[in-house]
Length: 123
Length: 385
Image 1 (cartoon, rainbow over the protein chains, first blue to last red):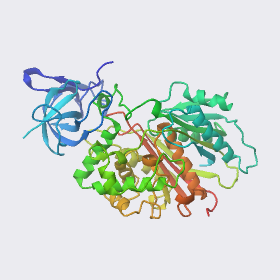
Image 2 (cartoon, chains in turn brown, red; image 1 turned 90 degrees about the vertical axis):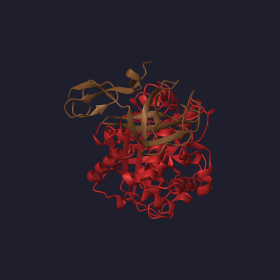
Image 3 (tube, rainbow over the protein chains, first blue to last red; image 1 turned 90 degrees about the horizontal axis):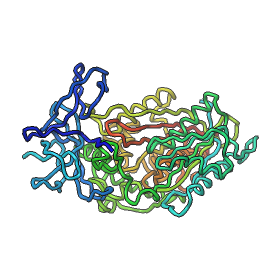
């Protein structure tokens, strides 16, 4: 099955999401699109991030399929870009234990072993 | 609308992995037929012009597989999947078909047997970007709860009060999965699922079936009029939205309902709504305009949305406590409001309601504000006791 999660570009050690932006209305999407889903304008590939702000977050405390708890998820609004769902890592790279506060500044740091986009919390 | 509910029925809801799904469906359909047949001019039997079925995780052919044993075969059977709103989507299509003259007498059936499919929570869909990232449904709702807590629009106690209320309601519903007297502290101290939501704030894995028969006017006491029914799919949900997931979809669908029916939120006497998680009931209460913004949580905590309050919500126990067999849930909500409007709800009866609202919304497709929201406004045709 194709991986539906956002594609990441890690050139130069900076992690960005490869998506598209509408050349007419400016709407950003974290995924490939044929046209702008808002205005049907043409889109161009764009890289978003690496920085963003947490819109909301939760720590999942139960196993979900093969995933072992706990793991932390956050909706992150990438700077000038789309909102993505990302896993949140603590300073040591393991899943963060305390739920990251809404409004926290975060940065994309790559993928975890499960292939999820991961952000780390900026001091 | 000149469409009426002639009869309703449901199986018990709960984990029933050893009971064939067909058996649960038969209980619901036979009860609905007997109910419709109570004292009408025409005898009711198993002949319908069509059957609309709500099912989410059922196998291909599940509807026909459970129906033919009742001798219901021949007329068209249509199976509808719309996540948690599958049952109400099937009901909406049946009502629309009767209103347009396409069919005269339609059976609506909701069926689901989750305990044979999932051992833990419902697994998120691997073909979905957020599902693949591990966004189980409790986590999706937890993200809404975290946001409202941050905005100061709800408190932990108010979230827990929804669970306390609905579990207390279900004590009076012998078809509910489980009920009980829990304290706010017990709800908050139950097993953590996805912060801030705890186990008692999440609807259980359930199996069950519910049925409703819709048709034209026949002047039989206890038939319930479908005043209005609307169905919408969510728009894009993204960085532009100031609202938590699902809020705008329910709000927009409600605006359509109020405009088409001429009914205002203040006119509604009782409501069965989608409370798969505690936060969902509070978000929905405000999106429906049943309270103002920031007022749903305080209303739940103060008992205003409980039995005996000014606007009873989920007298059945809701999805949290009656149980949530996805495809069956919407039809069970329809059945509950039908019983309420007839004055047949026993110890959980709301005094003398004339207008009852059913709301279901379902999700799972990331990037949208919800797969579907269905609102059904039902009206008593005879004075209730």
